[in-house]
Image 1 (spheres, helix red, strand yellow):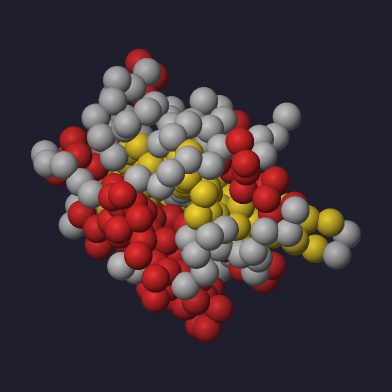
Image 2 (image 1 turned 60 degrees about the vertical axis):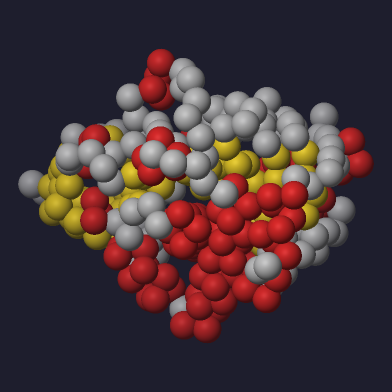
Length: 272
């Protein structure tokens, strides 16, 4: 059963409200209506239900914890209290739907960089990783993006863009402990969660605006600038192995193999 908005609305923490108030112009519609809860099942579920009821673009759900958060490929997104920022926003721009996951990755990486000055990179398709370790495999995940589209016979109705950001140290499950981290762990100092939220939403507004004005080429260029591992990294995927060779014009990951260049559009990719 989906949760209703009325059952999850809590008072917005002051650190979030202050940062949001200072970035109204930069954020545009994103977060203009924002519903906060200390804990929910899934912010994506709440945003999806609101979108089906006709909620405006930019309506955003933010939680301090999730009990049923999810990531790509049906995985659970570890969302403990007081450790992360979990948000989902509604996008009603049907023509941008194929690019939403890449745009979300750029927005999250750029927003965190502005708010914290932490150097970050994107690992295809939707992982935001810290760059402190040596080699691509040592880089630890800070955030992830999940784009879920709703469509019908006439095309895409809306996209819910979910973002999970690890703010503070947490006792990650064993399966994640060696490949996940948090912004504060990487910086070695506290971070302002309100600044992270506000700057991510502002970056999303800029990124989607640029995508509408300039088309996918500019988005792909920015994504590649944030993703050194998209060129020359050894990877494996179901059915093959090779070295990354950039992105195709539609955002697919390219891999160079002994048999030529292979397009990867979905599934699990392992950096080796």
